Image (cartoon, rainbow, N blue to C red):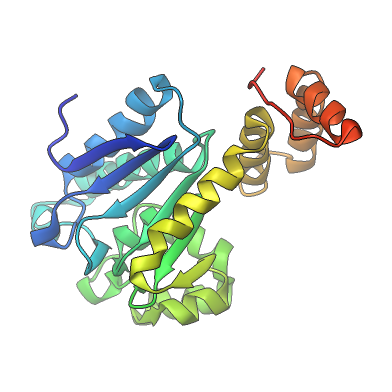
Length: 260
């Protein structure tokens, strides 16, 4: 697929995905959501020799400043529900991706942008970043999983306040609430993002994938997270990586994981 709104680069064993609509503050239009879906479901799974993905927005003002509201004007109940479902499917694909996906939030992360950041496994934010779900100001609600994930990260009480008022919060407050992992000067966030990807990349890749799967199971309706953990633990103990990791620990050396 030839991407129009995504810039894909691979370097230093990392895939860098930049949403490249800077003049529109990287707002998520239908085309961008379609391209994200293709990348995470078709493109990235076929690529090799990378430890994880860093997702960011072009420029220094915005990660993603929401959806492209002009595309919403012709919606009715049926088409609105279809749009919401399609967006949720894309963000679930990101959340369930077996390699670490880290959001480098370089400015506004509002509406769909906040939802996109929350779908990633980790978040590093610049000091000038702003987070929020301001959809009620337009007479709608978050539709790409925001009503569910924000509660998971900050708790029902604060999530309810933020979504009912539409207020934005600073990166510092997002850090206090547990919404982001780190807050740094803007020029430092990419270095921290790469550091985290490399640190995770040094671990057993099958184990990393099973951690992601098991933690996600806690929030999946109808799924027994403890049972999923038992299954995943059993699967990892049967791998060559486990034998290598255990041997390296006993022998006091760095393990050489192969992903098998």
